[in-house]
Image (cartoon, rainbow, N blue to C red; front, side, top):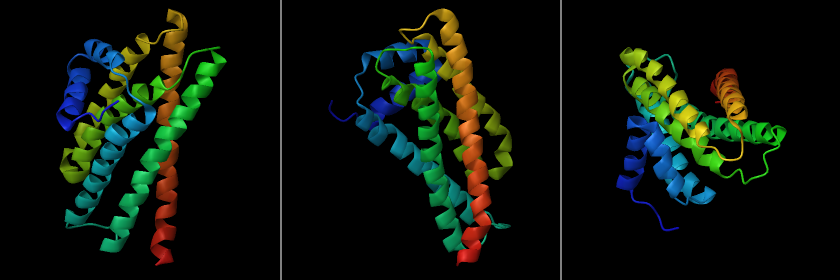
Length: 195
């Protein structure tokens, strides 16, 4: 499939935010490849997240983060952590689908998980830039709503299995992200001491 321009990407995300049911219908008509989704949605979203974290730490006058080189390295580690937690969540969701004896292709999980995560990352990015707006983190919860509506469009599972799959997928994704956050926090001190 040809490359999607940035306006079309924002339009798809806007549809998911404004009306998740119709947004998922529109996305269901799109034919994304895994590579295309990763290159056109996830990599740019993680890149923006890394830049927001880096700029937020650099402009924080009362920063206890450390020297500038540490902030840059630590922001890049955060980016790799986001990427790892995304793939860890995908792995857990695929495992879960297999336990439900799902026989179809699981490539749709890339965008079914990735698009709500991108929506959930935006308030965190804003909070990274403007730390006094920490309350915006609550808006990330809307990503779960968007994900839930996406699960309801899943073909090949009956209604009860969709609900169980949706709840467990949310729990697995939160667990994967929390695990990676603790891992990143654990390596913070060794990174400082390394240099």
